[in-house]
Image 1 (cartoon, rainbow, N blue to C red):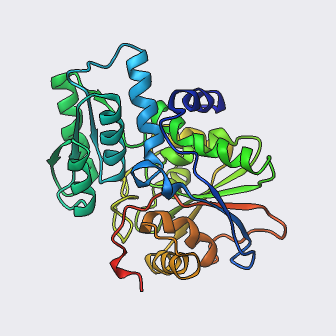
Image 2 (cartoon, rainbow, N blue to C red):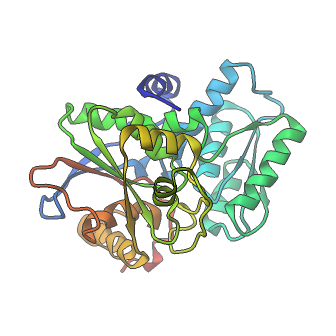
Image 3 (tube, rainbow, N blue to C red):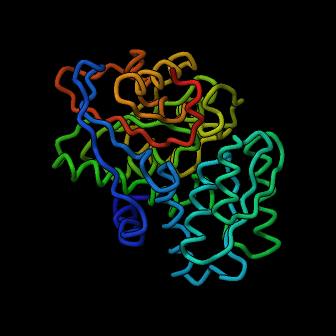
Amino acid sequence: MITRTDVEAARGRIAGRVHRTPMLSVDTEIGGVGWFKLEYLQRTGSFKARGAFNRIVSASEDGLLDPGVGIVVASGGNAGLANAFAARALGVPATVFVPENAPAVKVAKLRRYGARVVLRGLEYATAYEAATEHAAATGAVYCHAYDQPAIAAGAGTLGLEVVEDLAGQVDTLILAVGGGGLMAGVAAAVEGVAHVVGVEPSGAPTLHTALSRGEPTDVAVSGIAADSLGARRLGDIAYAVATRTGVEPVLVDDEDIVRARQLLWDEYRIVVEHGAAAAMAAVTSGAYRPAPGERVVVVLCGANTDPADLA
């Protein structure tokens, strides 16, 4: 469980290490959306850098980090990139376990950041098991892709920025959900101030399934956004925060995600990965319909994609 206090503490740890990403005012005819939070401009191309720095710095503060052993993470891409970047910036080694089908662009970046990359299995769950075994054997600090308090609290710092930049004049933040770290952090950060809508592909409904069954439950994973929203189960932290704060789940289809991603390019020359476009798809598909006058922010959380299919 995390609260706004945890998010505020995270902001202090990561200050000067990550970007305060900008807000963009949006044409109101696009489904009632008022602003985009341009988090895809974050270091390493996604929000994950926030949680990575918070986890590694807090582990060092707590005396848990051996600088000679460093950190380990399992990731389909973005969490690995963020933790490899943060580890390099903080002067400690990083080992990253990724599925064998991880996008080549992300694997190449991992190696450029100096990480030792280990390919294991075809799903995140297999890479995760191997990474936890590595942590147990070596004493490396394990940096979970989403289900650790420091990771989620770090991600939530973007929610504090949204509220401050809009002087509290925001009703709803719409964001993508995979394992739920971003959702948990942002929902904790804006609790009592704004409502959070968690959007996920219909082929990876971790939040929807957890809320309908009353607990995080494994789901089958498929679809165009599986490289970034491919967790098989919602994190325990995300479930606790979602139920406490009333996060609203929304499902979108792959076709809606593709159209939303193309629209962002056509209308705004914004290039995001399919996972990030899922948040926009909630509005453009009509899966989420803002009420008249509702002040809505869509979080565009990652840009690690191949833009070749954008016309």
